[in-house]
Image (cartoon, rainbow, N blue to C red; front, side, top):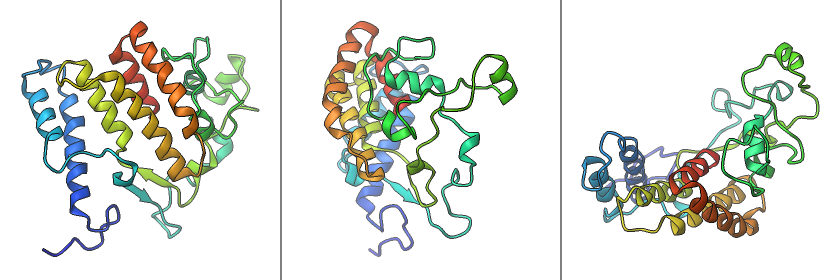
Length: 240
């Protein structure tokens, strides 16, 4: 049959669209996990049906759907127009990525995560807490100077945006395994997820953090024993 025309994600590759559809079903099924928690329930059944579908799910960076914005009017990166000086990364995200022993670290992570160097304009700088006006920040003792901004790679006029990544698919599989829906190994899947997230950032933002992925992944697998698999997987979803 004739391939779709004007496909900005996969250039008419229907197999990749099918992988995307199956990957979205994994995510949708997990959204129903509180309503249908059983490994034999509706949500788990639909999850396993999608995972075992003959077309598969997104497992490689090459099969990820990314949209690259254009310099043409109305299709530029939506945060390109933001005045950089008015935006800072949150203290919560920065501290969590650095693994700081501070109140702003909202995760169980205590290992430096190299993704901070991709998200932040300067990995050595702190962020600012959520929800304050400039006046309230000053009253609380915070200054906006020398605080991390969003990396210019993310703010670029033609910067890319992912719709779902291979990493997120593996995180969903790790969560399903931790819930007892499948017989896959959560630790193995978490390792694959983190490795792929580092890889896709390198691929789409011209960075070089992948060599650090294995050590970070090993530390987070160890954290699963201390803090529980579902907590660590959920935190890694937030970061990814």
